[in-house]
Image (cartoon, helix red, strand yellow):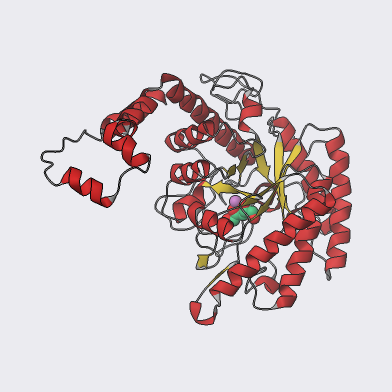
Length: 439
Ligand code: XUL
Ligand code: CO
Protein backbone atom coordinates (compact mmCIF):
# COMPACT_ATOMS: atom_id res chain seq x y z
CA UNK A 1 0.00 0.00 0.00
CA UNK A 2 1.21 3.52 -0.81
CA UNK A 3 2.49 5.53 2.15
CA UNK A 4 0.09 8.21 3.37
CA UNK A 5 2.87 9.99 5.25
CA UNK A 6 5.85 9.66 2.85
CA UNK A 7 7.58 12.49 4.70
CA UNK A 8 7.64 10.44 7.94
CA UNK A 9 10.45 7.85 7.93
CA UNK A 10 10.64 4.73 10.09
CA UNK A 11 11.94 6.23 13.33
CA UNK A 12 14.93 4.51 14.92
CA UNK A 13 16.73 4.79 18.23
CA UNK A 14 19.91 6.84 17.75
CA UNK A 15 20.76 7.72 21.34
CA UNK A 16 21.00 11.02 23.28
CA UNK A 17 23.66 12.47 20.98
CA UNK A 18 21.37 12.42 17.93
CA UNK A 19 20.32 15.78 16.54
CA UNK A 20 17.62 14.41 14.28
CA UNK A 21 14.04 15.52 14.94
CA UNK A 22 12.63 12.15 13.93
CA UNK A 23 14.95 9.86 15.91
CA UNK A 24 14.58 8.43 19.40
CA UNK A 25 17.15 9.71 21.88
CA UNK A 26 15.88 7.66 24.85
CA UNK A 27 13.10 5.31 23.72
CA UNK A 28 14.84 2.17 22.53
CA UNK A 29 11.88 -0.17 21.91
CA UNK A 30 13.73 -3.49 21.94
CA UNK A 31 16.25 -2.60 24.67
CA UNK A 32 15.84 -4.16 28.10
CA UNK A 33 17.94 -1.38 29.64
CA UNK A 34 16.35 1.77 30.99
CA UNK A 35 14.36 0.43 33.90
CA UNK A 36 13.98 -2.58 36.15
CA UNK A 37 11.92 -5.67 35.42
CA UNK A 38 13.62 -7.46 32.51
CA UNK A 39 11.06 -6.16 30.01
CA UNK A 40 11.87 -4.38 26.79
CA UNK A 41 10.97 -0.70 26.80
CA UNK A 42 8.21 -1.41 24.33
CA UNK A 43 6.70 -4.01 26.68
CA UNK A 44 7.13 -1.88 29.78
CA UNK A 45 5.88 1.45 28.45
CA UNK A 46 3.01 0.20 26.28
CA UNK A 47 2.63 3.42 24.29
CA UNK A 48 -0.59 4.14 22.48
CA UNK A 49 -1.82 6.64 19.88
CA UNK A 50 -5.15 8.36 20.62
CA UNK A 51 -7.14 8.09 17.40
CA UNK A 52 -9.29 11.14 18.17
CA UNK A 53 -6.47 13.65 18.52
CA UNK A 54 -4.03 12.24 16.01
CA UNK A 55 -6.34 11.09 13.22
CA UNK A 56 -9.73 12.77 13.69
CA UNK A 57 -8.57 16.11 15.14
CA UNK A 58 -8.38 18.98 12.67
CA UNK A 59 -6.83 21.74 14.76
CA UNK A 60 -10.17 23.54 15.03
CA UNK A 61 -10.53 25.84 18.03
CA UNK A 62 -13.30 28.26 19.10
CA UNK A 63 -11.57 31.06 17.19
CA UNK A 64 -10.57 29.37 13.98
CA UNK A 65 -11.01 26.52 11.55
CA UNK A 66 -8.92 23.38 11.16
CA UNK A 67 -5.29 23.71 10.13
CA UNK A 68 -3.97 20.14 9.96
CA UNK A 69 -2.49 19.01 6.63
CA UNK A 70 -3.64 15.42 6.25
CA UNK A 71 -3.84 12.92 3.37
CA UNK A 72 -7.67 13.06 3.39
CA UNK A 73 -7.85 16.83 2.75
CA UNK A 74 -10.24 17.54 -0.10
CA UNK A 75 -11.99 14.14 0.10
CA UNK A 76 -15.70 14.39 0.79
CA UNK A 77 -16.87 10.79 1.33
CA UNK A 78 -16.81 10.32 5.14
CA UNK A 79 -16.32 6.54 4.83
CA UNK A 80 -13.33 6.99 2.53
CA UNK A 81 -11.89 9.49 5.03
CA UNK A 82 -12.49 6.96 7.83
CA UNK A 83 -10.57 4.26 5.95
CA UNK A 84 -7.70 6.63 5.14
CA UNK A 85 -7.49 7.68 8.77
CA UNK A 86 -7.31 4.07 9.91
CA UNK A 87 -4.58 3.31 7.38
CA UNK A 88 -2.71 6.41 8.55
CA UNK A 89 -3.00 5.24 12.16
CA UNK A 90 -1.37 1.91 11.35
CA UNK A 91 1.34 3.61 9.31
CA UNK A 92 2.17 5.93 12.21
CA UNK A 93 2.20 3.22 14.90
CA UNK A 94 4.39 0.97 12.76
CA UNK A 95 6.87 3.69 11.76
CA UNK A 96 7.18 4.82 15.40
CA UNK A 97 7.19 1.36 17.07
CA UNK A 98 4.05 2.22 19.05
CA UNK A 99 2.35 -1.03 20.02
CA UNK A 100 -1.20 0.26 20.69
CA UNK A 101 -3.98 2.65 19.77
CA UNK A 102 -7.23 3.77 21.45
CA UNK A 103 -10.48 5.06 19.95
CA UNK A 104 -14.01 6.27 20.56
CA UNK A 105 -16.66 4.65 18.34
CA UNK A 106 -17.37 7.98 16.64
CA UNK A 107 -13.69 8.75 15.93
CA UNK A 108 -13.25 5.83 13.62
CA UNK A 109 -16.58 5.89 11.76
CA UNK A 110 -19.11 8.65 11.06
CA UNK A 111 -22.42 8.74 12.89
CA UNK A 112 -25.54 7.93 10.85
CA UNK A 113 -29.14 9.13 11.03
CA UNK A 114 -30.05 6.34 13.43
CA UNK A 115 -28.10 4.12 15.77
CA UNK A 116 -28.77 1.23 13.38
CA UNK A 117 -27.08 3.14 10.58
CA UNK A 118 -24.19 4.27 12.83
CA UNK A 119 -23.64 0.64 13.83
CA UNK A 120 -23.55 -0.45 10.19
CA UNK A 121 -20.89 2.14 9.36
CA UNK A 122 -18.93 1.20 12.46
CA UNK A 123 -19.06 -2.49 11.50
CA UNK A 124 -17.64 -1.66 8.09
CA UNK A 125 -14.67 0.23 9.55
CA UNK A 126 -14.12 -2.41 12.23
CA UNK A 127 -13.91 -5.10 9.52
CA UNK A 128 -11.38 -2.91 7.66
CA UNK A 129 -9.40 -2.39 10.90
CA UNK A 130 -9.32 -6.14 11.48
CA UNK A 131 -7.85 -6.62 8.02
CA UNK A 132 -5.12 -4.07 8.77
CA UNK A 133 -4.43 -5.70 12.14
CA UNK A 134 -3.91 -9.08 10.49
CA UNK A 135 -0.63 -7.91 8.97
CA UNK A 136 0.41 -5.41 11.66
CA UNK A 137 1.81 -5.66 15.19
CA UNK A 138 -0.49 -2.77 16.30
CA UNK A 139 -3.04 -3.77 18.94
CA UNK A 140 -6.00 -2.10 20.61
CA UNK A 141 -5.30 -0.82 24.14
CA UNK A 142 -8.85 0.36 24.74
CA UNK A 143 -12.08 1.34 23.13
CA UNK A 144 -14.76 3.68 24.42
CA UNK A 145 -18.11 5.15 23.43
CA UNK A 146 -18.37 8.84 22.67
CA UNK A 147 -21.27 9.76 24.95
CA UNK A 148 -20.66 13.51 24.95
CA UNK A 149 -20.48 15.02 21.44
CA UNK A 150 -23.96 14.57 20.01
CA UNK A 151 -26.54 17.19 21.16
CA UNK A 152 -28.69 14.38 22.62
CA UNK A 153 -26.11 14.18 25.43
CA UNK A 154 -26.44 17.87 26.35
CA UNK A 155 -27.84 16.97 29.80
CA UNK A 156 -25.64 13.90 30.22
CA UNK A 157 -25.74 10.33 28.92
CA UNK A 158 -26.16 7.84 31.80
CA UNK A 159 -27.05 10.83 34.01
CA UNK A 160 -29.53 12.46 31.66
CA UNK A 161 -32.91 13.36 33.20
CA UNK A 162 -34.42 11.83 30.02
CA UNK A 163 -34.62 8.00 30.16
CA UNK A 164 -34.62 7.76 26.35
CA UNK A 165 -31.13 9.24 26.38
CA UNK A 166 -30.03 6.69 29.00
CA UNK A 167 -31.35 3.96 26.68
CA UNK A 168 -29.57 5.39 23.64
CA UNK A 169 -26.29 5.69 25.58
CA UNK A 170 -26.63 2.12 26.84
CA UNK A 171 -27.20 0.84 23.31
CA UNK A 172 -24.22 2.82 22.05
CA UNK A 173 -21.94 1.56 24.85
CA UNK A 174 -23.14 -2.01 24.18
CA UNK A 175 -22.04 -1.74 20.56
CA UNK A 176 -18.73 -0.08 21.50
CA UNK A 177 -18.06 -2.94 23.90
CA UNK A 178 -18.79 -5.49 21.16
CA UNK A 179 -16.40 -3.88 18.68
CA UNK A 180 -13.72 -3.44 21.34
CA UNK A 181 -13.96 -7.17 22.00
CA UNK A 182 -13.96 -7.90 18.27
CA UNK A 183 -10.69 -5.97 17.89
CA UNK A 184 -9.07 -7.64 20.90
CA UNK A 185 -9.16 -4.52 23.11
CA UNK A 186 -7.42 -5.03 26.45
CA UNK A 187 -9.52 -2.44 28.31
CA UNK A 188 -12.70 -0.43 27.98
CA UNK A 189 -12.89 3.19 29.19
CA UNK A 190 -15.72 5.34 30.51
CA UNK A 191 -14.97 9.03 30.61
CA UNK A 192 -17.99 10.93 31.95
CA UNK A 193 -17.63 14.08 29.89
CA UNK A 194 -21.26 15.10 30.38
CA UNK A 195 -21.91 13.09 33.54
CA UNK A 196 -22.06 16.03 35.89
CA UNK A 197 -23.90 19.31 36.19
CA UNK A 198 -23.84 23.01 35.42
CA UNK A 199 -26.10 23.99 38.32
CA UNK A 200 -27.53 22.07 41.27
CA UNK A 201 -30.73 24.12 40.87
CA UNK A 202 -31.80 21.74 38.10
CA UNK A 203 -29.93 18.61 39.21
CA UNK A 204 -30.92 15.62 41.30
CA UNK A 205 -27.36 14.65 42.14
CA UNK A 206 -28.18 11.48 44.08
CA UNK A 207 -30.43 10.12 41.34
CA UNK A 208 -27.85 10.93 38.63
CA UNK A 209 -25.10 9.11 40.49
CA UNK A 210 -27.34 6.10 41.01
CA UNK A 211 -28.19 6.09 37.31
CA UNK A 212 -24.50 6.24 36.41
CA UNK A 213 -23.79 3.29 38.71
CA UNK A 214 -26.69 1.32 37.19
CA UNK A 215 -25.31 2.03 33.72
CA UNK A 216 -21.84 0.78 34.69
CA UNK A 217 -23.32 -2.38 36.23
CA UNK A 218 -25.13 -3.02 32.95
CA UNK A 219 -21.79 -2.76 31.16
CA UNK A 220 -20.22 -5.27 33.57
CA UNK A 221 -23.15 -7.67 33.08
CA UNK A 222 -22.99 -7.39 29.31
CA UNK A 223 -19.21 -7.94 29.26
CA UNK A 224 -19.79 -11.15 31.16
CA UNK A 225 -22.52 -12.17 28.74
CA UNK A 226 -20.34 -11.73 25.63
CA UNK A 227 -17.11 -12.92 27.24
CA UNK A 228 -15.26 -9.60 27.13
CA UNK A 229 -12.31 -10.14 29.47
CA UNK A 230 -10.76 -6.66 29.27
CA UNK A 231 -10.35 -4.32 32.22
CA UNK A 232 -13.02 -1.63 32.75
CA UNK A 233 -11.62 1.82 33.47
CA UNK A 234 -13.11 5.10 34.66
CA UNK A 235 -11.25 8.27 33.71
CA UNK A 236 -11.39 10.97 36.39
CA UNK A 237 -11.72 14.63 35.38
CA UNK A 238 -13.11 17.41 37.58
CA UNK A 239 -14.57 19.78 35.00
CA UNK A 240 -14.76 20.62 31.31
CA UNK A 241 -17.09 20.24 29.57
CA UNK A 242 -19.41 20.29 32.61
CA UNK A 243 -18.74 22.61 35.53
CA UNK A 244 -18.62 19.68 37.93
CA UNK A 245 -18.07 16.09 36.82
CA UNK A 246 -18.99 13.25 39.15
CA UNK A 247 -15.72 11.38 38.47
CA UNK A 248 -13.79 14.42 39.62
CA UNK A 249 -10.58 12.81 40.85
CA UNK A 250 -9.16 9.44 41.91
CA UNK A 251 -10.50 9.72 45.45
CA UNK A 252 -14.02 10.66 44.28
CA UNK A 253 -13.95 7.72 41.85
CA UNK A 254 -12.84 5.34 44.58
CA UNK A 255 -15.68 6.48 46.85
CA UNK A 256 -18.20 6.13 44.02
CA UNK A 257 -16.97 2.67 42.99
CA UNK A 258 -17.04 1.49 46.58
CA UNK A 259 -20.49 2.89 47.34
CA UNK A 260 -22.05 1.22 44.32
CA UNK A 261 -20.24 -2.16 44.53
CA UNK A 262 -18.26 -1.49 41.38
CA UNK A 263 -14.78 -1.78 42.90
CA UNK A 264 -14.26 -5.41 41.84
CA UNK A 265 -14.85 -4.46 38.20
CA UNK A 266 -13.21 -1.08 37.66
CA UNK A 267 -9.82 0.58 37.79
CA UNK A 268 -8.86 4.09 36.76
CA UNK A 269 -7.40 5.61 33.64
CA UNK A 270 -5.50 8.58 35.07
CA UNK A 271 -4.75 11.56 32.86
CA UNK A 272 -2.06 14.11 33.68
CA UNK A 273 -3.95 17.19 32.53
CA UNK A 274 -7.08 16.05 34.39
CA UNK A 275 -5.03 15.73 37.58
CA UNK A 276 -3.81 19.30 37.11
CA UNK A 277 -7.37 20.55 36.59
CA UNK A 278 -8.37 18.78 39.83
CA UNK A 279 -5.68 20.74 41.66
CA UNK A 280 -3.47 17.69 42.12
CA UNK A 281 -0.17 16.57 40.74
CA UNK A 282 -0.18 13.53 38.48
CA UNK A 283 1.93 11.82 41.13
CA UNK A 284 -0.81 12.41 43.71
CA UNK A 285 -3.48 10.85 41.50
CA UNK A 286 -1.29 7.87 40.62
CA UNK A 287 -0.25 7.39 44.25
CA UNK A 288 -3.85 7.46 45.43
CA UNK A 289 -4.95 4.99 42.77
CA UNK A 290 -2.03 2.64 43.32
CA UNK A 291 -2.43 2.59 47.10
CA UNK A 292 -6.13 1.79 46.65
CA UNK A 293 -5.44 -0.95 44.09
CA UNK A 294 -7.16 0.84 41.21
CA UNK A 295 -4.32 2.12 39.02
CA UNK A 296 -5.23 0.74 35.61
CA UNK A 297 -3.91 2.90 32.79
CA UNK A 298 -2.59 6.35 31.97
CA UNK A 299 -3.50 9.09 29.50
CA UNK A 300 -0.04 10.58 29.16
CA UNK A 301 -0.14 14.28 28.33
CA UNK A 302 0.43 17.56 30.11
CA UNK A 303 -1.34 20.88 30.62
CA UNK A 304 0.01 24.37 30.75
CA UNK A 305 0.47 25.76 34.23
CA UNK A 306 -0.71 29.18 33.10
CA UNK A 307 -3.92 27.93 31.47
CA UNK A 308 -6.88 26.53 33.38
CA UNK A 309 -8.24 24.17 30.76
CA UNK A 310 -7.45 20.82 29.20
CA UNK A 311 -4.76 21.73 26.67
CA UNK A 312 -3.85 18.06 26.05
CA UNK A 313 -0.22 18.70 25.16
CA UNK A 314 2.30 15.97 24.50
CA UNK A 315 4.31 15.22 27.65
CA UNK A 316 7.76 16.84 27.55
CA UNK A 317 8.23 17.60 31.25
CA UNK A 318 10.91 15.23 32.48
CA UNK A 319 10.37 15.95 36.17
CA UNK A 320 6.68 15.07 35.85
CA UNK A 321 7.28 11.96 33.77
CA UNK A 322 9.88 10.73 36.28
CA UNK A 323 7.56 11.03 39.27
CA UNK A 324 4.71 9.46 37.26
CA UNK A 325 6.90 6.56 36.21
CA UNK A 326 8.06 6.16 39.81
CA UNK A 327 4.44 5.49 40.87
CA UNK A 328 3.87 3.21 37.88
CA UNK A 329 6.97 1.17 38.68
CA UNK A 330 5.89 0.95 42.32
CA UNK A 331 2.59 -0.39 40.97
CA UNK A 332 4.50 -3.21 39.27
CA UNK A 333 3.74 -1.59 35.89
CA UNK A 334 0.39 -0.92 34.27
CA UNK A 335 -0.53 -4.58 33.57
CA UNK A 336 -3.25 -4.47 30.89
CA UNK A 337 -3.04 -0.65 30.78
CA UNK A 338 -0.58 1.52 28.92
CA UNK A 339 0.64 5.04 28.26
CA UNK A 340 -1.86 6.50 25.84
CA UNK A 341 -0.94 9.85 24.32
CA UNK A 342 -4.25 11.62 24.85
CA UNK A 343 -2.53 14.64 23.37
CA UNK A 344 -2.84 16.84 20.33
CA UNK A 345 -0.29 18.78 18.38
CA UNK A 346 -0.73 22.54 18.68
CA UNK A 347 -2.89 24.17 16.02
CA UNK A 348 0.20 25.71 14.45
CA UNK A 349 2.01 22.34 14.29
CA UNK A 350 0.00 21.33 11.25
CA UNK A 351 2.43 19.19 9.24
CA UNK A 352 2.34 15.39 9.39
CA UNK A 353 6.00 15.53 10.49
CA UNK A 354 4.87 17.46 13.58
CA UNK A 355 2.52 14.62 14.50
CA UNK A 356 5.41 12.16 14.35
CA UNK A 357 7.78 14.54 16.16
CA UNK A 358 5.22 15.07 18.94
CA UNK A 359 4.95 11.33 19.55
CA UNK A 360 8.74 10.99 19.46
CA UNK A 361 9.00 13.81 22.04
CA UNK A 362 6.39 12.17 24.28
CA UNK A 363 7.94 8.71 24.04
CA UNK A 364 11.43 10.02 24.72
CA UNK A 365 10.17 11.98 27.73
CA UNK A 366 8.35 8.97 29.21
CA UNK A 367 11.26 6.60 28.45
CA UNK A 368 13.73 8.96 30.08
CA UNK A 369 11.40 9.33 33.07
CA UNK A 370 11.15 5.55 33.24
CA UNK A 371 14.94 5.23 33.38
CA UNK A 372 15.24 7.99 35.98
CA UNK A 373 12.52 6.44 38.13
CA UNK A 374 14.30 3.10 37.80
CA UNK A 375 17.49 4.73 39.15
CA UNK A 376 15.52 6.34 41.97
CA UNK A 377 14.16 2.98 43.05
CA UNK A 378 17.40 1.05 42.53
CA UNK A 379 19.36 3.59 44.55
CA UNK A 380 16.83 3.21 47.36
CA UNK A 381 17.69 6.49 49.16
CA UNK A 382 14.16 7.87 48.92
CA UNK A 383 12.59 4.61 50.09
CA UNK A 384 15.06 4.48 52.97
CA UNK A 385 14.35 8.04 54.09
CA UNK A 386 10.62 7.38 53.90
CA UNK A 387 10.93 4.24 56.00
CA UNK A 388 13.03 6.12 58.55
CA UNK A 389 10.45 8.92 58.77
CA UNK A 390 7.80 6.47 59.93
CA UNK A 391 9.98 4.10 61.92
CA UNK A 392 8.27 5.15 65.18
CA UNK A 393 5.21 3.21 64.04
CA UNK A 394 6.97 -0.14 64.09
CA UNK A 395 8.29 0.05 67.64
CA UNK A 396 7.07 0.79 71.18
CA UNK A 397 4.22 3.30 71.41
CA UNK A 398 3.68 3.55 67.63
CA UNK A 399 3.44 -0.19 67.16
CA UNK A 400 0.97 -0.38 70.03
CA UNK A 401 -1.25 2.36 68.50
CA UNK A 402 -1.03 0.73 65.07
CA UNK A 403 -2.05 -2.61 66.54
CA UNK A 404 -5.20 -1.01 67.95
CA UNK A 405 -4.12 -1.56 71.55
CA UNK A 406 -4.40 2.08 72.64
CA UNK A 407 -7.37 4.34 73.42
CA UNK A 408 -7.88 8.07 73.94
CA UNK A 409 -7.66 7.40 77.68
CA UNK A 410 -4.47 5.33 77.56
CA UNK A 411 -2.86 7.94 75.29
CA UNK A 412 -3.94 10.71 77.63
CA UNK A 413 -2.22 8.88 80.47
CA UNK A 414 0.90 8.65 78.31
CA UNK A 415 0.80 12.27 77.09
CA UNK A 416 -0.20 14.26 80.17
CA UNK A 417 3.33 14.83 81.43
CA UNK A 418 5.18 14.56 78.11
CA UNK A 419 7.57 17.43 77.47
CA UNK A 420 9.88 18.26 74.60
CA UNK A 421 8.83 15.86 71.86
CA UNK A 422 11.78 15.77 69.51
CA UNK A 423 10.89 16.01 65.79
CA UNK A 424 13.00 15.12 62.76
CA UNK A 425 13.30 17.45 59.76
CA UNK A 426 11.14 16.78 56.66
CA UNK A 427 14.20 17.45 54.45
CA UNK A 428 12.11 18.44 51.46
CA UNK A 429 14.79 20.51 49.74
CA UNK A 430 17.31 17.69 50.05
CA UNK A 431 14.79 15.19 48.65
CA UNK A 432 13.99 17.44 45.71
CA UNK A 433 17.66 17.85 44.89
CA UNK A 434 18.03 14.08 45.17
CA UNK A 435 15.36 13.61 42.47
CA UNK A 436 17.25 16.04 40.24
CA UNK A 437 20.29 13.78 40.47
CA UNK A 438 18.39 10.86 38.92
CA UNK A 439 17.07 12.84 35.93
C1 XUL B 1 -11.29 14.12 27.62
C2 XUL B 1 -10.57 12.86 27.55
C3 XUL B 1 -11.17 11.81 26.70
C4 XUL B 1 -11.03 10.43 27.26
C5 XUL B 1 -11.78 9.38 26.48
O1 XUL B 1 -10.71 15.08 28.42
O2 XUL B 1 -9.53 12.71 28.15
O3 XUL B 1 -10.60 11.90 25.44
O4 XUL B 1 -9.72 10.04 27.35
O5 XUL B 1 -13.11 9.68 26.29
CO1 CO C 1 -8.21 11.11 28.34
